[in-house]
Length: 137
Length: 137
Length: 137
Length: 137
Image (tube, rainbow over all chains, first blue to last red; front, side, top):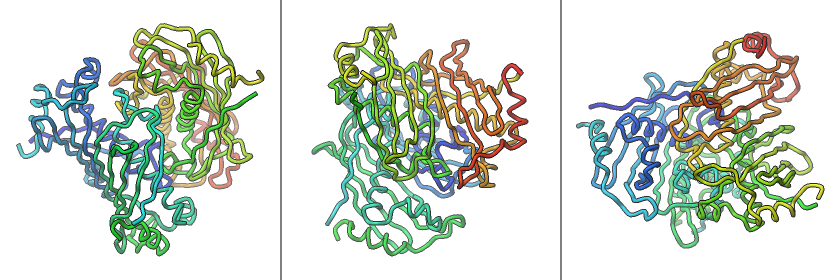
């Protein structure tokens, strides 16, 4: 099984008054790992946006928080596909600070037609890219 | 049963290129409803921060997205307590645009000692305030 | 002279570790006051976005910070037009906490054709709306 | 003269509905370059926060926007010191996409005592670090 790795450093403007990453910002970082992952599998969102036909909105997101992330912490995000359906897919994320698991997250995305919002089958290149990172494959 | 109501207008800088609220921003809005709720029950975070002894970090957050929220949409957040434990509590949120349920969310918070991070019993005024908004009470 | 008034409460997720509003978030709040102002003068950005022909990007933004804004502070934003050109306009903002001036800001916007980015004359309804809020008029 | 270089990729959640970086987010990126710069000169904000005695709040920020920054654009931030006073300093930033100058920014910071907010002389290690990156030195 292959996981995709992406890292970020905790910035000052995402700290709360207690000096730790505000929980809501975790989802932005999950999405950035996802953006990098899509570029990696040759299905970048920039191209998708330009084509203007398909979007991949989220229908579900969740996270568990285990350990606070602090200013300048270098966090490694480990991404994998958890499920690949006809018209949706599920991604899993783990946020590591060295050996410490700080948080984990899950997002569920669907493919829709831009404008109408009608459900669509997952585009083939996306499906193939996801399959290469499917957990327990 | 009583629910707490808070509203916000979808701002320009939280839209994605598709013109809808970016999913991650929902959690900030949930938290703002929670902040207003805490003021309402006389347990504002500003006072808690100043005292500097207790914090209420999240250990879990999740959301389901049903309907896009767009620029200038007036969204009503309906908040209720879902569970009140010894040392933790769970809040539920529904995001309404008129009669349309756009999203729902859940957050789980624990009480900890600032600095040490040691788990604490929920402060009594918080427990009483939550109890008044407990679902199906 | 008329100024436009808009208010917001400082939210938890925009505080820095020192417990004060992170400077960069001031611009988001200025923009929200501007969005409310545009709705007030009957030229809402939602309509402009939907028409898809004209955009009003910023070419300049600046702010001075005088007094920290803290959690739950109710801030009143006072907005006025400072200059109205053929193809651009300048807005001024003051951020008050009661009688205390916490910050001030200026933004300069241009009218452009969506897509091409070509400069356009300001739309008439916008020009008229701005004129009613022009400082020292 | 030496400038400090830092780069970032434009993320999805900072795009506006026109598909370009929302102007207000530029300041967050300027601050992240500044955070990286402070680490580089051995005066990281994490250490400063932990010591809890000195803060470096902004009293002024401004930016000019020349060219839109889009999803996945790799932006190089070029940072230099523009002025070093007894109790304040000014930083300049240029945001490059390849050879194209997309934006420029300036921030003015003061040294203050945490808590009281009383003005302080710049700490010596900070002064020395800034001096090595002073424009036209």
